[in-house]
Length: 397
Image (cartoon, rainbow, N blue to C red):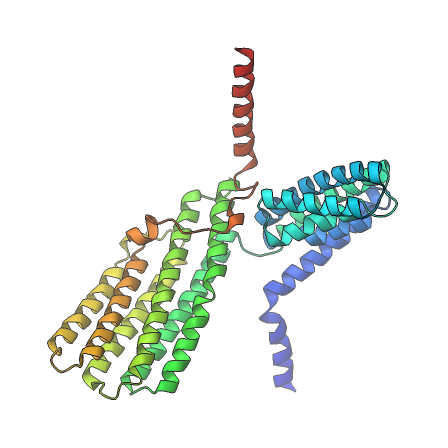
């Protein structure tokens, strides 16, 4: 009975972030219904629908998509009113609305979800019983629903985008360190092909988490540009840490693959295996130490000394392999040198000053530069300058 109760409680404890988002989304939609009905005649339903479509895990995402959804819906509804005026409500109005809203959502780079939400919202606005006043009421309800979604999204997650990025880095780093220590213990005790296959499978799963980490790091960096409450320098440092973890995870997979190949080699030398096991263990410790330091608010990434120590471990392993070069078959020697190379790249990634991390632009998602990619103040300033320059040129003609 006690075990069952513990399991039941753990179902909620382990999913507390998801439960929080569900509760906030439910409260936001209910609030949108009440406010929409109070401010707009029969506007509760539209406001609640728009709120449910717009609310996201963070304030930044909700502002970005809510703002874009209002613009897209307004444009789509305006075109719909024109098409309804000339062709009556029917397939032409629906087709034109969906087409234009999809183009607008794509132009604003709102992402796949909003590219669906904007046409859906516009169709709600031009639904049955359309008239000028009805369309105005529904547009007002759309604005109310998006605004309430923006307000409630602040409570949707307990942490900022930077905090969520640190959590992602910590989680992936911890898994990588645990996998490396598991591989170290296996290599030290004559591992089998089945064990190596399990390591490789775990490493592949780690690599599949890279897109989520990159997306979160991009959000943290863009949010810092948009919000005056966040330091851009801190967000940029976290972004580099995210890229470093990405490089590190790829090398962990490379190590797992080389060990899988080695599991089929009957001529493995125990002394070399112990040296490799020691190097893998040191790599695991270095990653764990780095992750703990990243969690610290005032950590100086360039002066922790972890990368230098790990590079020394790689150099020692290289010397060990060169000393035993005559005893090792060529294939085994090349495979071991490949492991050394992977450890060296992990050390360079932990250093976070490698040119591969800072001088090479990482391809970003198309939605990483949306209409709200910068703060409204910055956008307004840029637009006002452009308008002033254009007006001045026109007057000087």
